[in-house]
Image 1 (cartoon, rainbow, N blue to C red):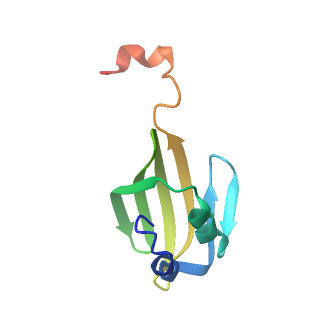
Image 2: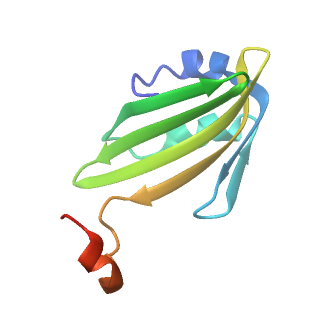
Length: 109
């Protein structure tokens, strides 16, 4: 995705892929997942921070910058026949919410 190699990305995705965004309740099926990523306004950069694999499951922690904004994604995916078949992505904006006061005595920052 970072390279905007949409043909290469398409080869990694099942034609019947289904990706859920838990924050908004959206689901992107088939070619709409890649089309949505292609349509996202330019200026973003992706850093894959960590990946974990176990059999047909993959987890990824991704940091996305877009101008002054920083977003984090924790994604959990199922791989079938060498392509990503389904997934659930949990997106948050970095520092978008103040920490609850009750946790202050327990933090080091």
